[in-house]
Length: 211
Image 1: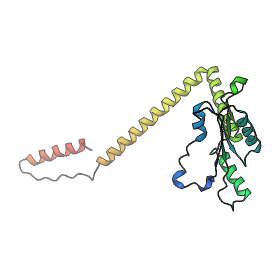
Image 2: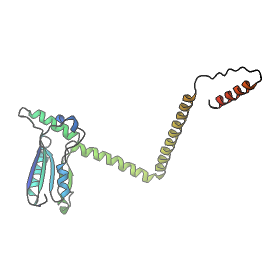
Image 3: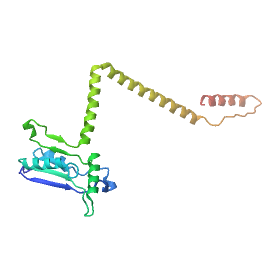
Image 4: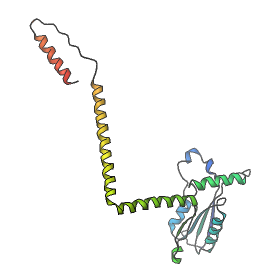
């Protein structure tokens, strides 16, 4: 990649998605495609042989025509000779549908022809992205048409947070009082000169003050 020579590379990932170790399930492999795109001078494509033959063929042709380094990363979960085409197809569909293996093409020189450099070919991801952008755009347009709505939403959210904070503080205070309240206090005294009676009253008053 750094040499900028006209070299075509095909990299195959054959690990089935369902056979990943539990320790690796939460982290992705090093993204070779992203690494190659960061150079800015290479054609990069991510394909899945059993997902879209048309996309695979188009990527291969574009990589061959590209005057410079090209990298095509292909997903082919075929780890054993006993693997059937059906199981490979199922593994491929699962990986592509959930977004584990995205399908895309990156041509850094496409903009010279008035085209987008990046083409997302994953149908499901593209549809979900389109729906997300549509909702985001609708909300943005709604806020522009009705500025008061944005202010009301912010105020409502702030008021709700304050109410929750007050309720939590009140509950915490009630719990504290319940913890301080112990068994009933009984003060017994006996005195001829009244000194013990006065002392007992003072203790009783302090006890009431402390709950």
